[in-house]
Structure formats: structure tokens, C-alpha cells
Image 1 (cartoon, one colour):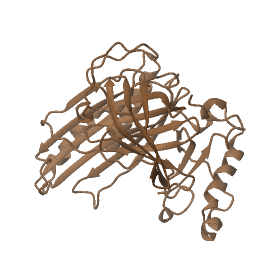
Image 2 (cartoon, rainbow, N blue to C red; image 1 turned 45 degrees about the horizontal axis):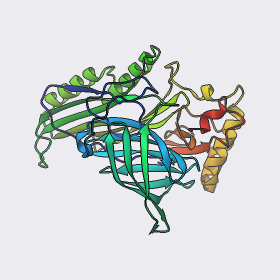
Image 3 (cartoon, rainbow, N blue to C red; image 1 turned 45 degrees about the vertical axis):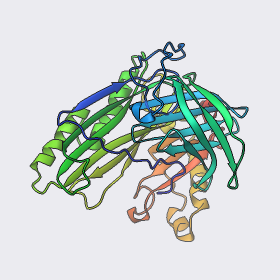
Length: 386
């Protein structure tokens, strides 16, 4: 799949007791994408942090955490969204020069890979000696890299901040039947569902959180509407299977955009069961207006009569890399997709197999910058994250 932004980090599976264990860990605003700090009481956005207790230096002790961090590195304002789990860290980094990095690693020391227009990743920097000196403050060194040459490290200190974003709680349901920690082929079933909840006092957000949970439940087990229902259905299917084998089902979220009252989430599933010919890793995207709690549609982003302009921009992007056969197949009939997400880079639209070409042609995506879209955007501030 041609995507200009992606996270490939897959969530590991952690053994637990046969009963389901739901963990509701609250992040303390402000935040950047990192695992959740333990035992922190949620505060209202823009409130002054009250906790000064030292955070664990070992990120594996931090549980599941989302943090949105703001500050300055090398004279440039930066925003970092971080998702921390005991198995790894991923997120995004954005600065005032519109450098946009995908962050991914096994520890708090990241390699910053910049997403280019060609969809490839170029190593631009390393983050070293990073640690939380308290639950709200991340410090470390930023090491720029140019053509493989490392430059002098620049010290930084970033603080949680929710000026244009919303705090997010990461909740988790885990269940294991059998010994999935073993590398043997013995029968076991591991379920690991990590799901975000928007943590504000806005009553409108209830509907958004319900939809997030329902989507993840259906994603984990088709037809389920709650996490508990999905977990029970999976374990029931597992118990009824004669040649059980090894089952692993997980859902891991990513926060792609959390600015200007809008939120884009990515949900990545890993699924291995006896009924699957091969492991599958489908992806879903959810978009919300965090003021109203309503699902965000393309029409909500643009001025009236935007369709023709947007269709033309999408077509130009896709056809730019298309061969003659694809150009002929697409023609001028480029319908607008239902699937999309936002990042600080702009709007990425997605076509599933069969949407615009025969299914065997696969899926397609294109990213349009907010600058390219400025004539039809309702909100001119979408491209501003500072």
C-alpha cells in the first residue's frame, strides 16, 4: 500500500490471567506521544501540573501513555506526539520549519525519519539520553544528521501542553489462555486491545469515545459493539476450535493529528488464528471534531462546492506516479473517498482495493498539503500547529 505516513511498530502480547484485565491510565496534560505515566490524575487542559515526583527512567515501567509535548529544540518550536507502551515507542515530531518526522524505537532514544514527498523515510536526527525528569517533562539531546554526518548534540526540555489539542487516556484489555509467552507451537490465545479515550469534561465527547470503543471491538471481532463483548466472543471461538493452535489478536492505536479541535486516529490490528491462511494486519482510521464529538467527514473540512477542486488535486497526485495503463483505467472519473486522515503535513486520502480500480490493483493513497488545499479549506488554521 502506498502511504506517505505509516507506523510499523506492532504491539507485543503480554501474558495475563484468564480473566479480562481493564486498565484505565490517565495522562496528565499537557502531552506528547509517549506511554502513559503511572497513577497520574487527569487534569483539565492547560492546567498547571502539580506532580513533581520523579517518573520512571525505564520506559517499560511507564505502562501505556500518550503525551503531547511542546518546547524548543535548536531555536525551533516543536510539537511531539508520543505513544509509549512497554514494548516500544512511536509518534511524530513537527517543527516550525515544517520538518515532520516519524518516531519509532524500542527505547526513549529515537531515530527521527522524515517523511518525504516520495513516501520514503530519510534519517534526519537522533534523540539521545531522553528521559522524563518528572511525569510532565521530557529532556534529552537532539543530534542532527546530514548525509550520514552527525552534528553536535542540542539539549532540549519539552513539557506536556494541550493548547490546541486534547489529552488522551490509553485503556487496555488483555487476556491470555495458555502459555503464549513460550515460543513453542502449543495452543494458546492472546488478546491485547489498547484503545484511546479522549479525556475531557466536554459531555459531547462521550459519543466519540463510544464510537472509538465500538470500532475497536468490531475490529477485533466482527459484529461486537463493546470491548468485553469482543473478548468473550474471541475466547468462545477459541474454546470451540478443535485444533486450536496459536491465536494472537491485538489492536494498537496511533495519534496522527491532535490540533485545532480535530483528532485523527490510526488503529492497526494484528491477527493470527487457525482460520487465517496468513497473519493479517488491517488498518482503520477515525477522525473526530473534539469540540462536538462528531465524526469528521470530508465535507466538514471544506467550503461548499469543494468537490471538483479536491477531486482534481487528488487525481493530479495519483496520476503523477501512475503508468499509462493506470492513467487509462482511471480516466477522469475520480470519485472522492470516504477514508482519510490528517497529519501536520496535510490531508491523506485513501482508496481501498476496488474503489477506483479493480481489486487486484491494490489500494492507493495521496497526501495533499494544507497549502495546496488553502483555497477550499473552511479553517485556514489547520496547517498551524503552533
